[in-house]
Image 1 (cartoon, rainbow, N blue to C red):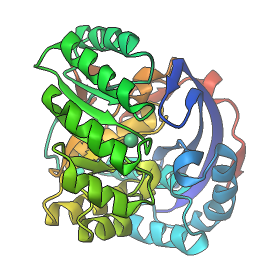
Image 2 (tube, helix red, strand yellow):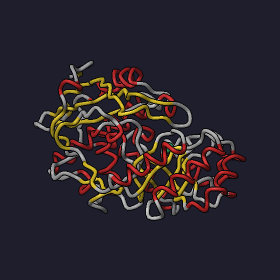
Image 3 (cartoon, helix red, strand yellow):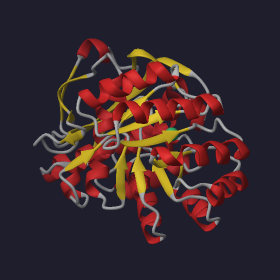
Image 4 (cartoon, helix red, strand yellow):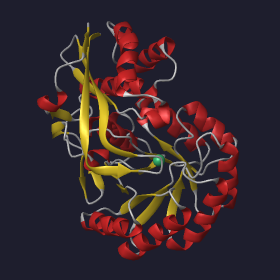
Length: 367
Ligand SMILES: [Mg+2]
């Protein structure tokens, strides 16, 4: 059995409203969709949702990277994923979001070939995954209103974006906690927006509002700062932008810089290496979360299957498909009900039908 054809599509998906985090705001997500066709009637879907801010990639660089990788994968076995990933890594360094698209499609094929939902093949630890909903940065009052709306929709956990102005950040958290009461989990993400000193001050001030954990308080490369914040914070510290690969995870764990790690398939290069991060972290007693960039239902399904499969992925922030107004997947994919990601009975990722208008014509076909 072999990979017969790889199709590459460029899609633009609009957000329901501008989504603002500490460094910038987004109005749309530019993603690359990959369809891998095998010579035995099984087709796999994958997605890249690159973030220039995090890995330096764009939809254009993803397509250029796939121009180098895809021809070399034709004829290879889609089930030998370790080998396929090794080939990708031997052709280009880095570019994890481009590689993720291929890795996800290969895992979809794996599930479909075995005729099982992917999470059941990969460990099947959970059958549903609790996800939060992210509140983008607005005024503290507006964010408190958004928080109430989210809770009314059934969300039991909220991820609150902060990292703009320390005093206003404290006010944000205070108003949101007051608005939603004590039964909702609140986790925060500063997206590198604070200095170590600011982070320590804010985290100590908001401890009383019962915060589950704080993501990436300081710039990604400031590992010394991260260690200092962790030592002086009453709230557990999660690395996001500081950890892309399994090697990064090991380095930060050894440096005692983190309490938790946020895995994103667009940083790790897909499911295979995302799992390796979770395993390294498990051995060190560090729980993981699975997060997302601006993925459609395809990339979100991939993250959800990995999170359900693996015991050490204890938290999920899988919400970009909810924040996007454009729905690329018409049938299938995971759905959210009362904060839980629910899986369809279909095999693989469970993607059944795409919106052909949004998908458009392939930008590339390799065979
Ligand atoms: Mg983050």
